[in-house]
Length: 91
Image (cartoon, rainbow, N blue to C red):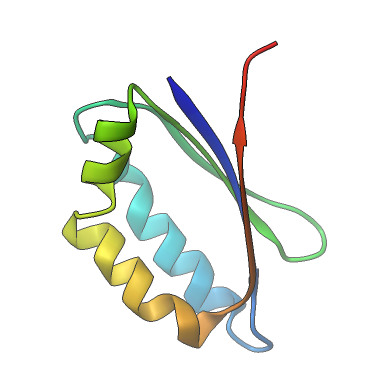
């Protein structure tokens, strides 16, 4: 299993657009083969956090080729000021 934590910070004035774009990822991603969890959260600073769990590297890589992910990837540079990602391992 692969678990990832992704942090996104919107460019000034782009928070609503980024929120909408992230929300458009949730249901289609959850419906993909191999998706165990796909949730989005925000904090008081305006950052968005995605927590993703995938059955395998293959299912995660397949996710990165979907139309909804490619739409996010294409729109991202216009909306995202900062992005970070870490892989989480169970204890």
